[in-house]
Amino acid sequence: MNYLWIALGSALGGAARYWCQGFFARRIDASFPWGTLFVNVAGCCFIGFFAAVTGPDGRLLVPTTFRQFVMIGICGGYTTFSSFGLETLNLAREGDLARAFTNVVLSLVLCLAAVWLGYQLGQSLNRLKGA
Image (cartoon, rainbow, N blue to C red; front, side, top):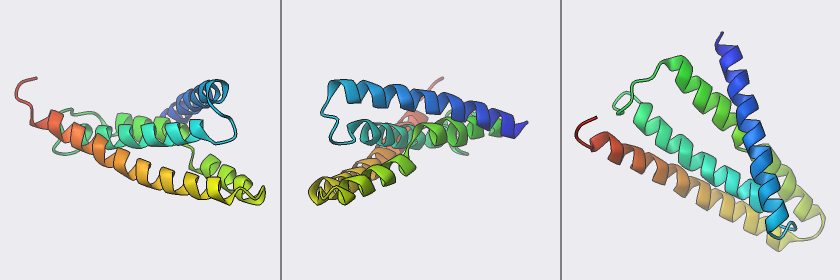
């Protein structure tokens, strides 16, 4: 049954990713993978937050299956590291090494910062008194 929940979460995350990437592609310069960068940063921030608030010391007690549905399924389907790799390779193959390097640096720095931020926000929520 866990596989079914993870598969459902992956489908939801993948659909959300497709929508977000299309949204950015239609509104911002499509020559740089802004949509993928946004999705990865947002996904990193969310998984950090969710891990903090649903962890052993977290504010929310959720079943393991639900945690897997969200973290492995939705977040795994939503974030796009494989797309990031392919887009970076394509930029490099097209000779646009500056944009390829920029994508690598921004993705690494912003995604790590987003995970940290999300986790800190979750920890702050955990420390609040009351419900």
